[in-house]
Amino acid sequence: MSAQPNIVLIGCGKMGGALLQGWLDQNIDANFSVIEPHDISITEITHHKTVEAAAKDLKSAALIVLAVKPQTMATLCTELKNHINEDTTILSIAAGQSLTRFSQYFAPTQPVIRAMPNTPAAIGKGMSIAVANKHTSQSAKALAETLLKTAGKFEWTDDESLLDAVTALSGSGPAYVFYLIEMLEKAGNKAGLPIEMATTLARQTVIGAAALAEAQSEIPAKTLRKNVTSPGGTTAAALEILMDGRTQNLFNEALQAATARSRELNS
Image 1 (cartoon, helix red, strand yellow):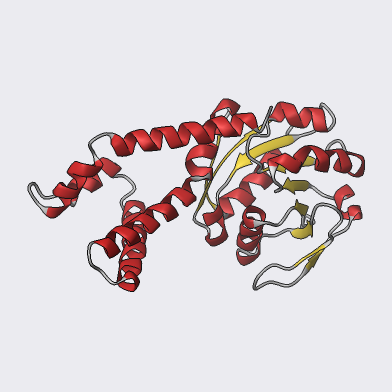
Image 2 (cartoon, helix red, strand yellow):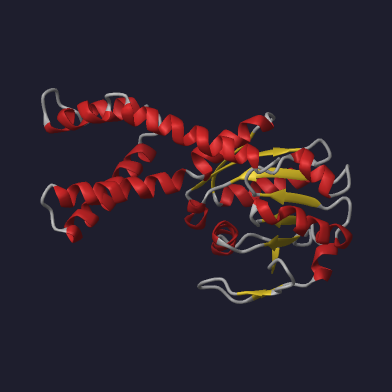
């Protein structure tokens, strides 16, 4: 039986914590350690035991997951470089940090995987896209894939330029859905519903629609929409407002802004 791989997670905020929560819940066959940046060595994970890590764990790591904000990545990697082996694989989940940038942070031949997951990873409903540099072995890619698949759906891409738009759509996407729930709550309340009822209806409607889209994944969203829209009915009256072009333009602008910001974070 092969030894369990040692995986070090650096940074355990919202995204790092979501991933770790999923890994521990799914009993991934690996040894996990957590290091907080700036020498904070103990992190408490909700509903799980305290995990301790130290610099010595870095030398034995099969994979080091970087889950820190892109604005702090350069400083972290400068500190990290002297504590890791040049053949240790780095898995970054930070927005806007390119493979080229990591070749500047670490050794030019350092194996690096750039991934963009999202926070539903905490309950196994996340979406992740990843790209690896040419120095990454198949075994390292397989390990990263196992971790990211545990968090939900996963795909590799060979085109790193897509990652900025991926960040804008799925990386940031959960926030858009939560904002949609907020807007439905407020609109329902303005239409005369008690706020508690509007909140329950808005949340459960989004949950139910998402579950239906998942259960009928072979059916395009456009068809699902048409299936619940009767000509001349109440849904049609609402969609006439929502589909006048303004909503689509707002989403276009929002994703363009997020994509541009992801690119800026690499500059």
